[in-house]
Length: 219
Image 1 (cartoon, one colour):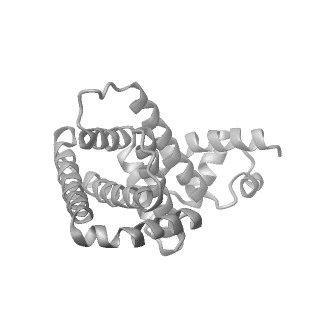
Image 2: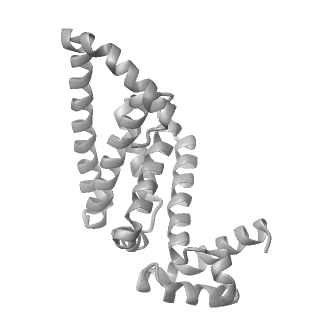
């Protein structure tokens, strides 16, 4: 099978599996049902999806990131403070998702064998938001921004999954509180950098920035 054919079959399978995920989760049973619905032979599934339904769960998440980027590009946020822009990006990301499909995905990525994949997807969402908002930071700042937003996004998703308030108003209030906490922490860091101790440690901080940039942030 060629690359374009595989990509097309994956897209068809993703659309076909979503109704089944609601009932069966991101499972082999849901994948087999999707293949039958899409008219794709079961023996081709290992070629199209080497990791099975997990690959489609990843595709669904990344599709949501792309939809969020498109929605952000269409928004007029000129009158919003930066923290409000970040909050709006997270809102758009979740408003474009199916809550039950995301719930099933959260259960999948909570499994120990898939936790690393799930963490990488959340990091990717945080990176997509920062890039969409024009972030050009480098070194430690680049990674700490994404780590902070990953934590905020992950916590907000879990809250949103159990939120029964009208229009998810409680989730957006929760999100605002988490962002406010991060902003207070960033202010403390900025105050420290401006202090005598911060200036004294500045050469070491710049050296660490260069090391992080060279290693790509790998531990």
